[in-house]
Amino acid sequence: MAIAIMCSGGDSAGMNPAIKKFVDYCFDLNLEPYLIYDGLEGLIDGNIDKASYNAVAGVIHHGGTILRSSRSKRFFEYEYRKQAYENLKIYDIDKLIVLGGDGSFRALKQFYDDFNINFVGIPSTIDNDIFGTDYCLGVDTALNVLRNAIDDIRDTASSFKRGFVIETMGRDCGYLALISSLTSGAEICIIPELEYDLDRLKDRLKREISEGRKYILAIVAEGTGATEKIVKWLEDDVGIEARASILGHIQRGGNPTVIDRLNAFEFVTYAIEELLKNKNTNSVVVYKNSKFEFASIDYITSQKYKINPELLKFANKMV
Ligand code: F6P
Image (cartoon, rainbow, N blue to C red; front, side, top):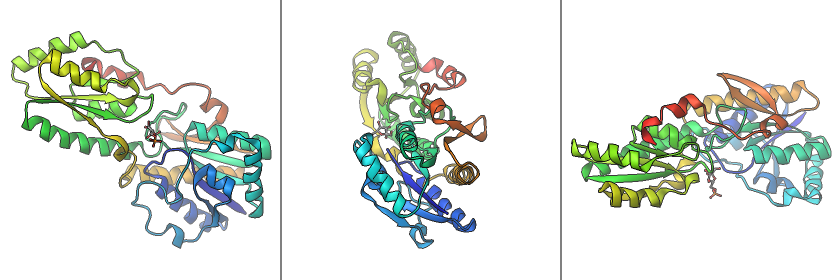
């Protein structure tokens, strides 16, 4: 029985451990594993290979994805989806595992509706912005990359009397910035989910500076677009020299953490078993309330992800 795995959208750490587990577990179950390279673009172009142990040897500790990924515009068109379907038919593949975000899952749902290609999605994005799951593959590694970077920036901030405005990724979601602010002991956290009051923050910081505070760390989510504004405000209103540090794509890479590796194994095992159990599957494995379960694409795409309000409460002092 042929089954394939692919990545779609932004890469995230944990994809390689998932791909390795996929191949190993398929061989354990006497299935025929296939690897689709270059995401949906590769599916259209027929970049498909039969998997071997060798193809996934020595990849478990690497970030990114050995399968590479893409964001495909062509896949929106029926003609190219048909071409993708013809490519799968060559290998008798009617089961797919897709590591990606909700946009990719929506594309695969269309593919399922067109050609009945069963698939299970594994939420994989550093943004942690998929409704219906508390965790997406790669988030833990991204948070640890951020922890290291912020700890390092603190060394410089504390060597001068400076404010550092550190911009995180996350698209419209403030999850990375919020968790990083909390776990790095930042003074300020600016995220799309919370209103902030610069006058109140200014009063507090000025008081603390007069009491001996030497430096300030502000974590700003890219989705707010407020990085430069906060730098200027620190200099002009709070009265401290300030620098911006935009961390960028380092957050997507890096050696996957133990949590991302183990969760990759769990996600893939659930996905393969679901594809074997159910003849008509188009769902997503989610991690909800410390348990792995399944959710429909309609459910996953029905709402916008919301950060747990209990976590948001912790940021009270930082906004
Ligand atoms: O979705 C992952 C992500 O890294 C976002 O956090 C960021 O906004 C975007 O992708 C960057 O996209 P690109 O790699 O295309 O620049």
